[in-house]
Length: 454
Image (cartoon, rainbow, N blue to C red; front, side):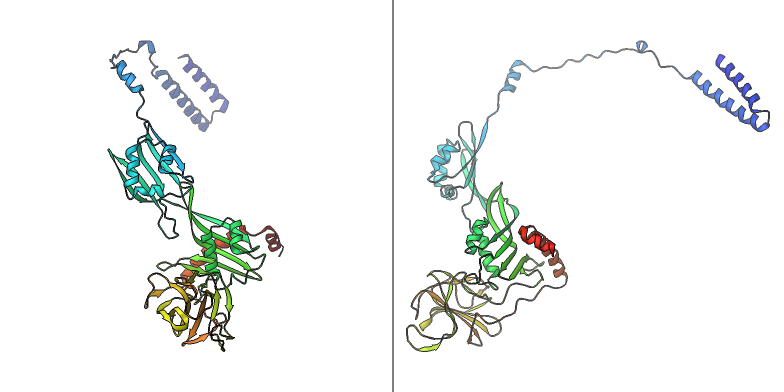
């Protein structure tokens, strides 16, 4: 009440201060009313109860505690297993490998020796990684290693031996591989393969470089000291370990004053191929040489025949090479003849489109399964260098024919495959742009400075 009296007296003084106008009296009365309401609400608000006055209720519950025996059993460790990894060493036997892996299991060793699939463990190459899981007593639970087949096109698989009760089962399962992209560059000092060895490029990739540029560069005669190359290619890894190389994704070769570039591109629903950075296919109708590495021992010209001694036209090109060197089909076509023809010895004739055909003579033997009517693709091996027929030494006699008339295969000019266009060309340009950026990253420092100054 004292507080209210004070408010009333303050309101009265305020009313006298602001004046006696009707507007001021209304405002003052309203403010006084609101103040009275606020203090009135505070006066009637309930007070929080004292904690000591609240009722207290006790709840009792009995908990079942584990017995001492149960607690001891919980502390006993479960059966332990161990996973070991070793690499096959030179001279390793199954016994020495098993010992290093911690395997002490006669039944497992006997199974590996007798099972047809499991015996693959006995054929592992030096350096191959092998893993095994064993029990504390050396009992084998499972054993795994990569399959020994390392062919370029072979699927990568793992050999798995697994315990099944009291026996074992062996199986070959597909390996989960990680694909990576490698970027390498090199400079020619003596030969292409010497340069790729220095650059730590696999031989399979070096062979692909030869294949893709063989229509523009003769790797027997055209290479010059100081020529450079950049290559971007796939590699496949398993559990952090290199398995094998894959396909070249892009490559650049600077030969003399010319630069050749290629990029792999797959059109939807079509087989992939290599193209120049302008979208034109690099696949020419015919290879420049049916052999990867050789030398021309006799060109397309008049000469004295080494056996008959007569002066006459040599209607092909002779490539000197060691017996057994693979011979490749220089273009897509169908085998028109495969057999023996007098002075040609073992010869294969391939009919291509239009009026073109090629002949490969003096072979030591034909490719397995090659027969008349069989379709072949450019680069397929059709036979091997020999010295059959009228030949004085191992070499390939190669003829290029138009309407069955021989032409010089080293000088004839044939068109490439049709270039990309439309939507495919737009997709290709995005791929080519990425590869161009990667080539720039591999550019030698002095070249990068020269380009920047231009």
